[in-house]
Length: 119
Image 1 (cartoon, rainbow, N blue to C red):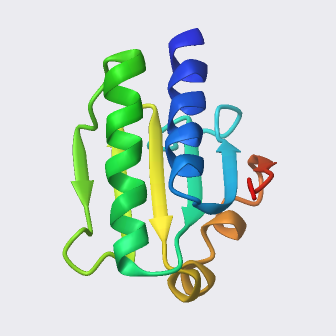
Image 2: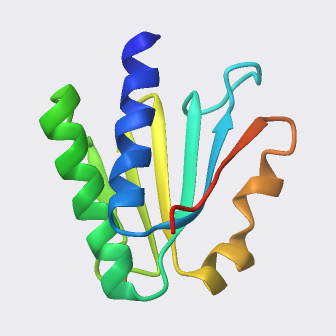
């Protein structure tokens, strides 16, 4: 479990390093039949920022906890990129795509933790 917490910390730092905003960590551990234990949701203002955030997350997790994502999907148009770290799924959105899919409300039973934006 501690490895997961460290992974979440590194993912968060990777997001913040590229000025990703509105980071939410959804703890799904108390919910049955979920595909993972945590969702991390954030947004970038442009496709190039979304891509930069994804690359930053990759770098931070590889360097500090030596973990690579099993899969990264959505980089082609970079409106919504999903990164699969098995226990942790990371979603990097453009604001309007995030609003449209509204993942936070999909998991209303989850414990949601807002990470303040770094300015």
